[in-house]
Length: 379
Image (tube, rainbow, N blue to C red; front, side, top):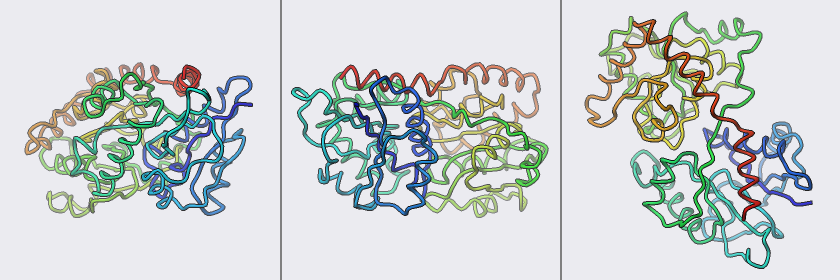
């Protein structure tokens, strides 16, 4: 039996974010699409027992779960400095840069291989939007990947081109996109969930961890300079770093109390309801490597307004309204104009609905997982 060991640690991180979602969906589909004679095992840092149980629940069919003796922070630092390899040899797939990267002999042992995933180049292009530690860690791990990774997976051709200008990976970069979770379907109790979430009849929705890079400040400020009929803004996502205080930003923008509301983290069913019923979905991120929430909004036929971060332009492929980031002093006003154009023009909204649905169908986790298996086979 050939085992593919997948680093699943981000799934049970306190702030899993997009990478945690990516890791969960890809690993589940790697299990489902495993070729004959192959299985998938997980690798996780020392964690509370409920986290191990949750991983087994989320990833049925996982053959084993290797539990490191090091906690998440210690394991991250150990791998950054080349310590603590996984026992034995064999295929390792990392859905991020968190990986045991070290010298190995793939020439004489074809199954001894490590593939990492780099989702964006934000640490190099927008370091001010990350913590200092985050920038340092990502750059250090990318250098280790340059030295020891057998291949590097990226989500978009945009990131492939950008990364190639920063580090020389030769021909080791492969583009394998993310996709929408099969669990993202409108539940049968949608009305009950909408009532519990206190969803208005019409509203603007945004999804993302509350951190500077996501452009939430610009989005909130746009409400003060647009003609969007006073629609409320709902923001889904956990708190991140950078002290993005939504209430303070809204107050400083002169918005009425309650005009902007955070919903925190939502499970898939609640998120599906929020996306499905939104009047317009806005993704104002300043830098992205893929932008999965955009595809999720497309899936539900919700009109999308997004920034012109290059990866978002690639992924949306014209199915949304694009807003230029350049000239940040006027970015909020441009967002306001775009949002107004959608909420006041039913013909445009309807066109965006169908173009979004069509675009979402081009992404598949099954296709992505099969490409990962093929990449490991090619190595």
